Image (tube, rainbow, N blue to C red; front, side, top):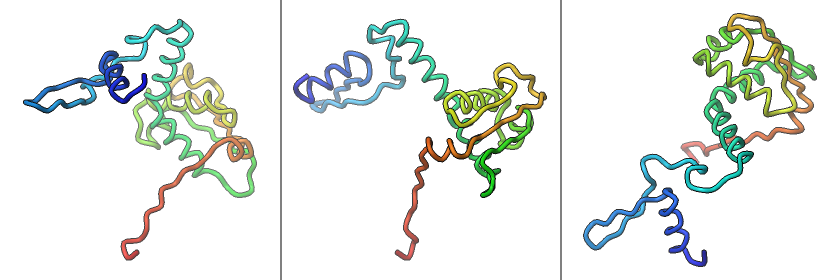
Length: 156
């Protein structure tokens, strides 16, 4: 692909853009539903599994973030490790999540990072069973980044 036209034609060919003509004007817009990558490109079985895993993780990212924020709020200056006893149902109530979002959000939180653990496995634990969540704050600080948006005051 050498020009922007080539890129746009390719994107239209794989379903990422739709062409609409209105009189003499051509409009390009995203379709109402973008196709999955494996529906338009030949992928290996391994890559298809990776794409499915990424979609699964993304589906529970909000719950994952809410749980991680909640754990950070539990942190005190002097502790190197946080241990919290809770259950999936208590976590769901505390964070106003539905039960499955709490379950899978916690599972994603502990599987995607090396600084957090949960016992027993949130994916198989009973909803009311006690789960011990452990966070290693030294690893957390070393491996994670935090991005904050700061807007100027209205007087500025």
